[in-house]
Amino acid sequence: MQLNTILLMAEWQVKGLQLFMALSLLIVLHEFGHFFFAKLFKTRVEKFYLFFDFLFPFGNLLNFSFFKKKKGDTEYGIGWFPLGGYVKIAGMVDESMDKEQMALPPQPWEYRSKKPWQRLLIMLGGIIVNIIVAIIIYIGIFKYWGEKFLPLSEMRYGISVDSVGYKAGLRNGDKIVALDGQPLYKMRDLSRGILLKGAKVIQVERAGTLVDVAIPTGTIRGMIKSKGAFAEPLIPLIVDSVPVNSYAYKIGLREKDSILSINSEPIYFLNDFNDKKIALAEKPIELLVLRNGKDSIRLNGVLPKDQMLGFKYRSPDKILKYTVIDHSIGSAIVRGWNFTIEQFVDYRYQLKLIFTSPEVKASESVGGIASFAKNFPGTFDWQAFWMFTAFISVILAFMNLLPIPGLDGGYVIFLLWEIITRRKVNDKVMEYATTIGLVLLLGLMLYANGLDVFRMFKK
Image (cartoon, rainbow, N blue to C red):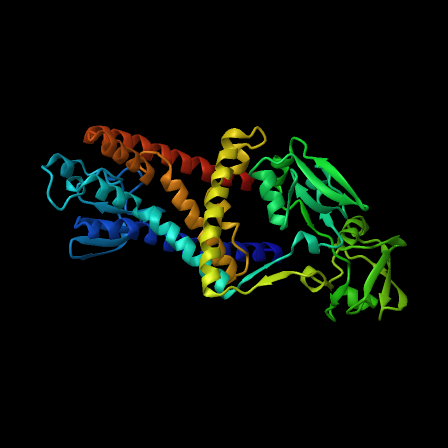
């Protein structure tokens, strides 16, 4: 097995482990939200499970659990089907489809015997906890790590664009000024404005002149496929370090050298160097470098087949002026709250795009477990882990709020109907609606994860 394959497998194992940890934590906390309000209103909870102990959504099929323990009225356990979890609340039509219990007269400790507003809080409990968890995680991130970002005003060399940015009309060296006439502060605001809010015009400073760049059709689709990083800071190519076992060291490149040209073609920025060396694999190269700010030196060699000279270039944060915010506990709380709302609203826009934008295809944008896993870094990093875990918590809250029977939002719709009309929805109607909803959810899960499998084989 080749080294690259082994490293790729190890990377995916790390990603998969992080996803498993995040989902397990968030599922337990989501279900605890239902559990908490059920207990608060003296409602019996018969089961509390991480993962399903049956073949979802068929409550009586392949019943098996890896672990279970009865404490009081509740059986706590870990099921074998790893796509969610559940609490079985007495007297409620849910995933377990316990029709025998529902055929008996209501008991005081059952869900169906509680007041509508109490049942509403029980059903919203998981969503409430997911939002609280996201806020708490973001507060912790901002307090412990603070915030670090590069204001657009500090990108003094302008931007470097990929093929998507170039097709959109941007050019290397452009300085972003505004979007649809609204001044921008961060690069993130540019991609959010185009992807989520459908902005039409980017105002840039180009060679000292303000230019309006109309965003063409196809840009959103291109950004989604390239993960939105269509413009990045343009930075000078300065050597930061050169390992002694690298080819760069062998031909004479040293720390703090500035590369001026490759084969007599001028090099001003990192992207210039990357663009030119791609076509030079296994061919002679001559580097002109500036050493100690005054000496021009020519270095000759043959670019390796893998195109790797092996030196590290100076990162943007060592050249450009980044803004660093060290939050107090008070400002971290405010930032965590606001950022959670931003993420919730942004995800709503993302979901809306699938149904409203002609540039967005579900087959390219929807994904399952593998799509989630690849968003985690290949090496474990606590900040990245908690950042994406908080975002998943926001996603769980949003998805569970959708008015689909079988999800929390479906139950909420029925409860709101009951509160408004003072007429309870018939249990049979609830049972049929829940069955349809659960089958629909199973179909969506199979579709999303099937797309992941298709993409793997397509590669």
